[in-house]
Image (cartoon, rainbow, N blue to C red):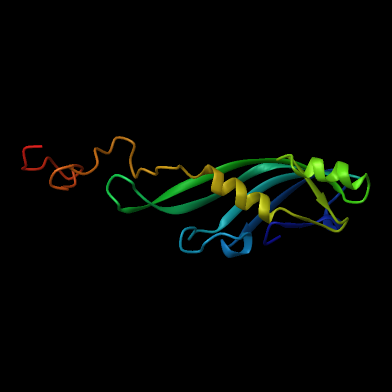
Length: 156
């Protein structure tokens, strides 16, 4: 499979190992920020209309360091764990309540679309204040010199 839309008809009614890959625009992410492919190694268990998906989704995000303002690539790995059932099997209000749960999706009986879930999980994994290095001293508040290169000559 090449994207995060699982074809349920091709899955065995047991445990399936599925490798998926997509570009950033295919899952609704910016290609300038997510330059590497989004790769998923998933274990999909199908039992009737119910589907369980567990696995790891990996990519790399291009971010700007809040200390030095240089761009850097941050590897992002997210554990995916969710359950899906066929829509229309239960009351619509019950389905709407379950859809608000982070671990429950509904499918049409043919395909299970994971793109929105993958997009949200990758975005939630990004730090609010990205740092290119955790031990990075940043810039001098007085002269703006990059303290990673060495000490500045001002008397800050």
